[in-house]
View 1 (cartoon, rainbow, N blue to C red):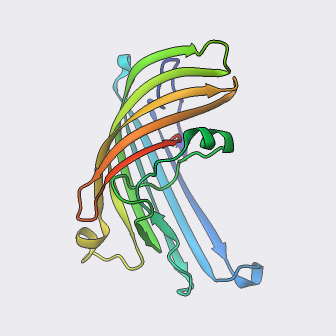
View 2: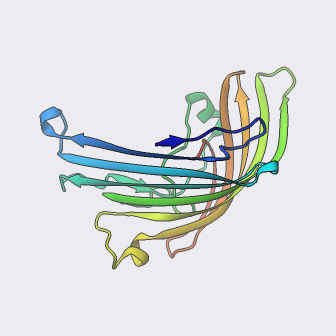
Length: 214
């Protein structure tokens, strides 16, 4: 399901709408796989205008998956924080983050056959740059920020008993995001962030990376 009208000229994000998806992946030795397993994925995203005239947006994303089948297969899903990366190299090789990240914890800190993650971001425009650097094919578009909270976890055997003690992890933080255009046609976003995990395994998660988030 999808109902997203897109953004406006000065938008830093989709500002209004709802999208959802459910998908199934099936593996079996009869069709060339080394194991027998079914994976069910779902995600949904909602965008709520908070101050429409200033393009402030509340973005909410929920996603999760479960893998059923061959117990010999190691943990399927992993979630955790974001790393510090080389943005120049990432821009050249095309790295983008848009996956499963629980900010405020070590990258890939939690793994299992089940994962669930919810994220809420308050997105705020800071500056409309709209300028280049001399005659270089490098164009600066918008600078914006986000305050966020992530909550989720991953496990092989989650239960109501360990939901709050072992499974559920919460992180909070903030990001600065710079939207750019490289070589006149390649859009990307440079993201500098800090998150703090609120549970015992939480860390001070500083990161610099490229990506579009959700």
